[in-house]
Image (tube, rainbow over all chains, first blue to last red; front, side, top):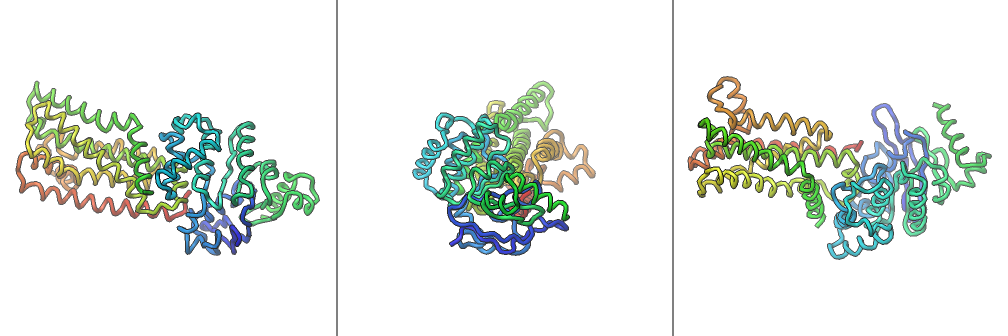
Length: 244
Length: 245
C-alpha cells in the first residue's frame, strides 16, 4: 500500500487555482521533498493532505484512508510540524510533549514514557522544565518536531522545518530528520535546495499549483541538462512564470 | 482523556498569565474596596455592600470573556490551533476543552468577591450561597461570549472588544455604578434589553431573599447564555471545518 496517493487533487479559491489536478504517489518510508516558490501550492497541498482544508475536487488517500470520507482515520495516522512554530507558550517543554501524547490517545503512564524518549532523542532533557516561550527559535522548532513525532505517526509532514534557523540549528535538525529516514514516511516542504538534496529520496517541484517534475535530484538534473538542483528549480519555476 | 488533556492545558495557560489574575480578581476587588470606601464616607444606597457585591461579581465575570477569547484567538494566530486541528480531537473536545476550565475559575471569581464583601460587612447567610448559584448562568454567558469572540476575531480585536467594550458595557448597563431608574427612558430600556442588569438584579434578589424576583431576571440571562453559546459553537465549528488561513 502506498503511503500517499492523490488523484486530481484540486483546490480553488474564488478565481485562483492554488492546486491544480495534483497526481502524486509516495511510498511508505520515503522522504519526499516538495519544492516551490511562495504561492506555488505546497502549503495548500499539505493542508489538504492533513485534513485542514477540503479539496475543491479530487481526493487523496493516506495509507488507504480518504481525506474526504475518513478524515478521522487519516488524523490517527499522521502528525504535522507546521510552518510556524506551534507550541503552547506557557507550558513547559515536558508539558507540551505530554499534551500531544495524551491528545493522541496515550494514557498518562505511556505518555510519560514517550515524553522521556522524545526528550532524550531531541536533546531536550536539560530544558524540559522551561516554558516554551523562553526557548530559542531553534529549540522551539526542535520541540515542535518532537511534538510531531511523539504520537508515532506513520506519515509526518514537516512544513519548512528549518525556516529562519541559523546554520548550526539547521544542521542539527537535518541530523534529526536524517535519522528518521526509512522509518516513517516524511513529506518535507522547503525553500532550501541543499536541504531537499541532502535529505530527500525524491523531489517534487511545484509551480503555479501544478506539479512540474518529480524524481531523484540526480535524475532531475539529467533530464533538464543542468548541474545543480537550484538550476533545475529556477528553470522549471521560470518556465512556469513565463507560461502564465 | 483527550478532552481532559486539552482542558488541563487551557487551565494552565490562563492561570500562568499574571495579567489574567490581576484583571480577573485584583481589579474587581480594587473597585469593590474603592466604592465601599466612598460608601463609608458619603453613603449612597446603591453602593451598600449587599447591593454592590452582585454587580462587582458580574463586572469581574466580564474578564472571563477576555481570558477565553484571548486564549482561543492567540491559539489561532500562532498556529497552535492549526496543529491541534490535525489531531484526532473532535469539535466537542475543543469546545468543552476551552469551556470546562473556565467554569470553576468563574465560580471562584464570584466567591472571592463575596468573601471580600464579608470583610466589608456583608452578613454571612444562606442567601449569599444562593446569589453565587444564581450568578453561574451569567458566568456561562461570559464564557460563551469569549468563545464566540475568540472564534471570530484576532487577539487584538478580542482585546478591544472583550477588554474594553464588553467590560464597559457590562459595567455601565448593569445598574451597578448608578441606579438605572434615575436615568430611565431609552437608556434603561437598552440596559434591560441586555442581560447584564438582569444578572445583577437576580444576584441582588437572591441576597435580599426576594426569591420570586429571581427567575424573571434569570430567564433573560439564561436565554442570552444559550443563544450566545449556540452561536459560539456554530462559529467555532465553521472555523474548524473551513479553510484555515
